[in-house]
Length: 340
Ligand code: DAH
Image (tube, rainbow, N blue to C red; front, side, top):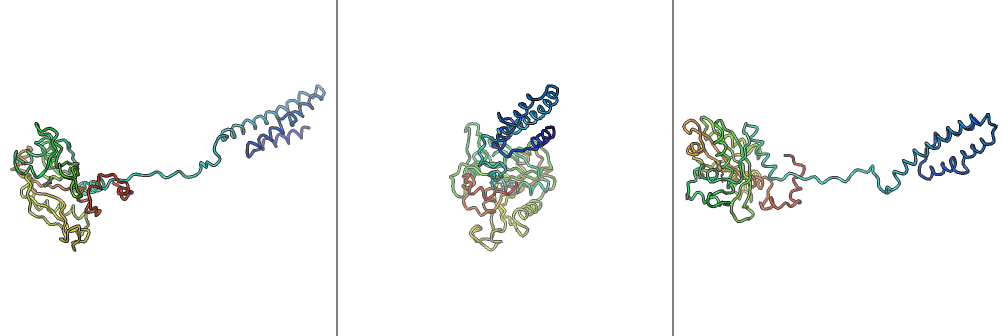
């Protein structure tokens, strides 16, 4: 009998049911009414009193082993009871749809990166501006026709608070708040009261640049802008400066780069001229320096401003700028994976 119990104990301890049914069969076999355990209890009743105690102890060990086994696997099978068997938790998850950076953000970042590498800081100003920072400090006298160059959204006609029409307003703020040497780049959103078309929008983005120090010359500006053009559009890019007019720079120029779509050979983007215009620039007018608290007898400097939409359109051959603000994911997805 002793040997029998030991073998049974080994069997019980080694038993691993594959499913609920096997566990139930085990229960019936060992702990059921006609099961092994009851057989032992019945046998015990027939034993002489002096043997009952030792036998009873062994049967108890068996009973505990059976109960432990039942308890352990009941818990395990119960947990999986109401789980759909077609659900495979080891399958890989559905891939998450990742968003992408907006092309305007990508190009803005490229522009600021290029200038950051040569020591320009980044500065920002408010989109709601007063007349002084958007116009007067920049030499747009009251009633001067130059103000008609930019169609302004006024918020308050009396005190002429407006949505800024250009990021040149940030130059004024930087000069008012610091002293040369100043090297800064100001990206931001600007607003103009214009009819929306493929080439114009009532809001768009610009990057303004400002460099003020002693003995800054037009040649310094030209070399910096050549460096920028080559970093932005490729090492073979050439630039050309055409005389222009802005109230806040003297002399003023517009800068073209060789068309990087046709390499200057002529295509419909550059209208078969081989050149595309990308920015306005010039030497900061001494009057503007004085307006902003910078001694124009000691310091000189240059400024430039470019439209981010325009550069993005050229770079990615986008023909209609309205697509930048339509949030069409079929367009935006084409920029996925590109990092800022
Ligand atoms: N503020 C001008 C515009 O919005 C762009 C510009 C031209 C900025 C020449 C400058 C500059 O700093 O020197 O059209």
